[in-house]
Amino acid sequence: MSTPSVYDRLTALGITLPPASTPAAAYVPFVRTGNLVFVSGHIARREGKAWIGQLGRDMVTATAKHAARSIAIDLLGTLHAAVGDLNDIERIVKVMSLVNSTPDYTEHHMVTNGCSELLAEVFGDKGAHARSAFGVAQLPMGACVEIELIAQVK
Image 1 (cartoon, rainbow, N blue to C red):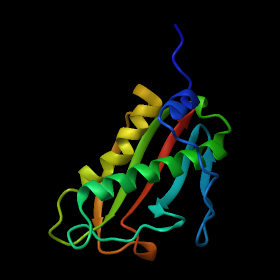
Image 2 (cartoon, rainbow, N blue to C red; image 1 turned 45 degrees about the vertical axis):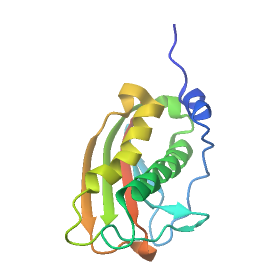
Image 3 (cartoon, one colour; image 1 turned 180 degrees about the vertical axis):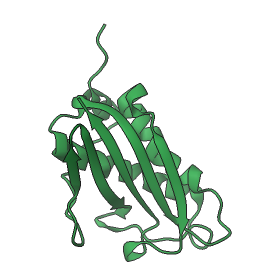
Image 4 (cartoon, rainbow, N blue to C red; image 1 turned 90 degrees about the vertical axis):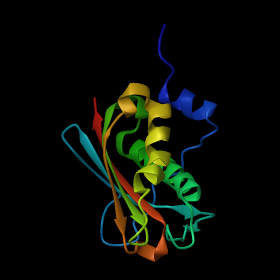
């Protein structure tokens, strides 16, 4: 029995991939070198604008976790543009998450689970990855979360 394609899983989850995002500064959305694809950081967006908030001040973990999940969808759109077929992803290697937070906020890892859990749903075992989650004083445009990833391609 064959495993469902990544696109079948996305459809089952009700997810339509967006086009690769346009960089807001002097960088490219992804770089492919050998069998690795480095996807630049994507900020959380809601209704086309930066999803603004700071954890520990005016946003709760559950909301930011949802924002991190939405970033995962945007990252997948960029990854699709980079490789042409998400079924060619051998593994999600690493995720790095930056959480806009106050100094006393400590649930960065829970926020980042929004991204990590979706990657596992979409890629199965190939979605299991190394990860870092950091709290930062601020992010571009006041966004609540920014996430980047590295993927291995067949």
